[in-house]
Figure 1 (cartoon, helix red, strand yellow):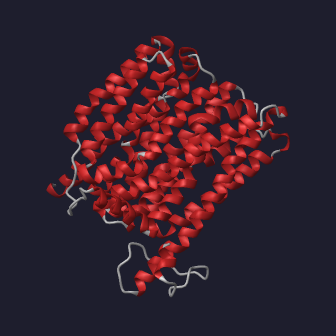
Figure 2 (tube, rainbow, N blue to C red):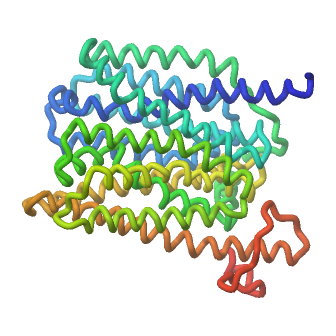
Figure 3 (tube, rainbow, N blue to C red):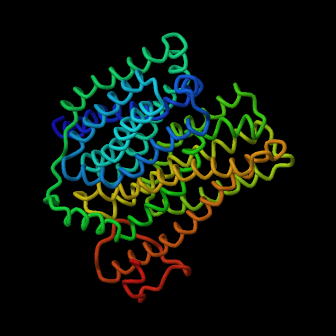
Length: 442
């Protein structure tokens, strides 16, 4: 009985932290159903409205490495608590925002709080759970967090309709702010040993050390190319693409968009359990998924007259939804190939990959749409979505390059008699073991 207490305590701590993450995902997606009201409230056009999303995602991506450093330095409990305070304060500020500039400031504060959350959760999981259980707990955390995206759709839309803008955002902001008392008292950090850098030079060296690990570089690119498609569609372009590009009725488009969340909720634990039990298969899963994603775009964009049946669209969107669960492979790589006391920093590096790709994807689609205005039959959206396809192909290429280099580093370590976290089977396409170290780690 006593032996079960540490594990039970770990699950209790994790549960309190995951509720905070669910709140972060809710606030991240809260503008989706409030977009129409925001156009009227701030008296702006669609392009200016998209700046809210680009700003928020840009802050998120830019803060991932600093967040990793902060978590390694101060621990998950403090950073999560600060994140919850920022989320609540940002949403309460948004409730009273009556100008475009004030609205941007509110979303920036909210984006900062959101940016601090996920890396802190993963650091907490790494500290309290074993390496083999890490992948499952991380993907379950992501799946539960996705429920916050569900709450940011129909329930939030109903609240906005019945309570209005100010009351709705004030209420959810105040509830979030109050939850900081829970995270501050329930969440606890585990001692990982080792001292953390204090000088700026030592901090930058820690980031360089994390980036120099081939497994971290592989994690960055794997995360870059697996999750950005669903991110770009969920945050901004999915609804207009479905309605204006594919001719789907607005009510049906909302249901199709919900598949991006449902697929993540269902697929997360499945993928997590698989990569936890068979870690040697995780990069094969990533590369297989990237191939399936590319084929899905071929079907969607190459369909005659650009209007595939609803069943085909639904199947493709479910494929896109699996990008979130598959991206968890990146965090398992970070956990295996970095010392635990530096996992926060390395996780921040990897997490910056997918979110910077999401911000870039949102921006590129908007720019191509502006250039393609006037094309007949909604074909401008087919052209604009090619920007996401190009990013997918580029990310897949970089992932393949660093997969070979990371594998070479593992084989080289085995040849030196060092222990490795995962035993790999050598293939003919692997890099030679006698390559210079600079070639492997470049």
